[in-house]
Image (cartoon, rainbow, N blue to C red):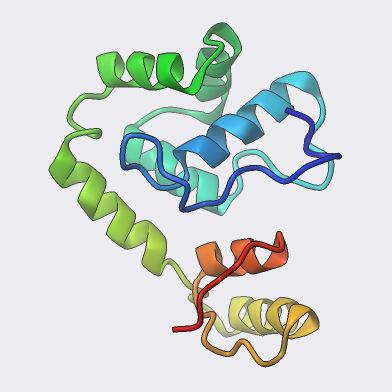
Length: 143
């Protein structure tokens, strides 16, 4: 994955129902290849999923390095973290993840400046996941 030439998958493009997992795999592949470009591996959004799973960014990158497909990465995670991947745990994670929003005045000001630079009419965008999709030029439905 070369993130200097393409975007990672959407934060809400789910793998086995889990938000951010496909995106994190893309970022880990780029991290391993040295092709992250402007992206940060182990950013706060990555950390939400890594913390939920109970794995470090380094260990996750190692799993991705030794498994060639999303499905084999998931299978390895399932072996290690079945409780974190239970339907109830995934639903709880997705709810937290999809509602993650700026939590300080400074973060809100930065969020608003990024959103407004892209499309000031999109004041309906209030969460990090939706902002990422807008920033990466994906269709983001108006709420």
